[in-house]
Image (tube, rainbow, N blue to C red; front, side, top):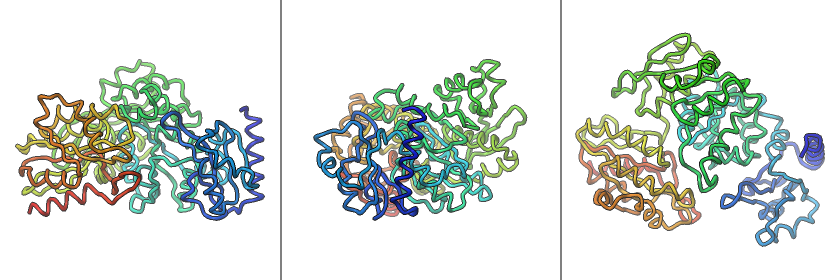
Length: 520
């Protein structure tokens, strides 16, 4: 589709929308969000087992009284969409070739190009996106009026509206940004998932700063292999209009991307990590980038003291949390603040006042010496679990106790990571309790069996299976010693458990607090 044809298509669609739809109506790809008079966008996204096609819901949209249905004309699956095709004679149904590829821009135009009036910071990577976006919002402060948009919802940190997705579908993204514009936010720190990039959900979003945290195994049920997963992420950094790029040199992919982008992108490129990783760049690449390097000086109960070196200055600050991965997350934030010309004195003050993100290395009873130390963490990938456990193992040893890990794996997701996570858990933790996560439409015991496949026979004596997650948490706390460290991994901030298509209230934090009270 050339630019002339595309321009003509947009003009035709806009004329149709403006002549037949009230300007206060919303565009949506989700029939659950439709109100009478709205516009339903129906198109397929993804591929293979990750294919999703909402055109089958066109009859439902019409029944709800939509003003129009814009539907993709390509690649109909006759058996699945026969009922939908029977209603396409309705005059409200408008065919649009390759709608999925242009839905983001259609919604962007309908909502008045909201990202042009916002400073959008896009954060991508396997782990760390939520922490980085939350910390950016905290560190910019109220004067910068920064909203977040991601896994935990969108809006002000203290008043988030949930969407159920890391990055929602294309019309919802634009509607979300329009709401944030109306609420007078200046900046949006936005998580950008690989699915969103692959499916074009943010194609119509003007992103000014792109941040990369890391790349490790996840979502292979969708992307099929790591090369495709990486390629999807890299699309964020190929955008011609980026002003800033921030890359993690401690991650191998971040280093490779830095070598590709420095000298070829018009954006200012800031790289962060330790000095030995910066040394892997050529002298020319070093001179054309902006390094933010660190050295860990000390670890205490109050956090991690690091020395930060840039080309122009160096300073010390304390990051008020634990884990080398959180140093990297904090460096991503510091690098961004420096790119936005925030004074160092203010950066130090704001970083040292950062609050932990719910479900991210969240210590439930820190300071209670009569109880085992309990932590909730979102670690749901092999790399994420390894980093969390490696951070907490020295803490357990320092306390003179054991590290106990309670976790499971989500159903209907990347199955290849299950045995890997079982292997990692038993290699690092002293005790492992396998339980149910979000089984979705799978049998929880089949998921647990897959995890067990990665655990050597001679290590299984340290592994217990308690399918019921609530009982697993309660029993673990009851049987732990006061010096032990317990980490409940996998669900983090989530407040529901998804079983057979239904979501039931469930909070790891609430169940931990209940278990701790019963021990008293």
